[in-house]
Length: 385
Image (tube, rainbow, N blue to C red):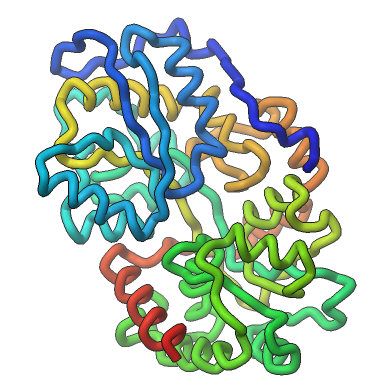
């Protein structure tokens, strides 16, 4: 493992003297808050939680953290709500768990809270992050953003001719059975991005309608399926196989390219490529509050969320490139990040990313209901085949 990537808490008191907004409800004694991460986001935001706890012990006595697979989290929250015993105060989720929770109406409408203290989100967010905020329907707050993918990652000593089109990728998989792999989209950012990016690459009828507008995409995935050995349950397991040499090529995102190489899971020499005509399908992580959390805790959580959107805190999102770039708000250059993050991006980042981000369209992921449909169809029609 690269020694530059060791986890540490960067206790920055840059926000310690700032007056944080107060909810209209009275804040009593400091509260203990339980957080569940279903997006791998703590790799980016753990220092922000640490900073807030250090700077505002009058608000939070402690944070307790747990992790859960994204597909399982909504069911866990629903079970607690049915039992009227909600002990999850804050969740960190991607569009997958967000979508499932919106369908079941389990998240608090944060935007409807009185005197929430949140800044003007449209004014502070990068444009794609603001568009991602709209997908939350007021029930999540974007904390991290990146253009994501889909990109190809490959080992240059194993892949002589790198595919440049979707058709060439299919031909590669056909000619090299088992050497191309991607993870189940419902539990993988790169897998999900690949699924949603294919309609743009293939010129499908309606990239936003997996039920009626993805005829080319579903046919392509079923053909590709014939040459894929299996689908890992998560991206981490997939990258381990790429690093060990079991697979030669996979789909990736900016963050899943940089971070595993920085951690030594994948060789530094791995390369990336984009397919002709690709569109970025961006991604974001959200803070959401389950229904049933007490008003006292919600008041503390809103102060924390507002704190987490400050530029000084957002700069920690660069981390080790996991969600590259990472910050959701504007005007947070890499120079604001901890030196360790700057060093990692300098060593493992890709200079071509700046050009690719600037000169290729950035699309939103599917709306929640459509995303659920896409996951279901993939599970039933592709993987089950």
